[in-house]
Length: 81
Image 1 (tube, rainbow, N blue to C red):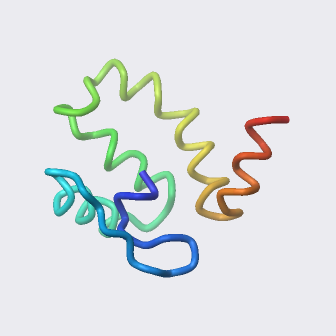
Image 2 (cartoon, rainbow, N blue to C red):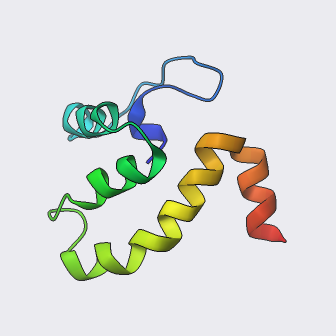
């Protein structure tokens, strides 16, 4: 979900290679918080059936909060510990 925003953690552009790249980027850009980005992307029922989106919402939002606010290294460390 971070990747589809098109910018890496150093602020450099990422070339997103996905048939839905423009739509995914627009959803990501329109959301202000990690939780909003996750909700927007999980709303894509062609990718996430509603039942799956509901199941993923809490854990993915928690991980996204860490990733967007503390970075990938800290997010990975939290998963390992």
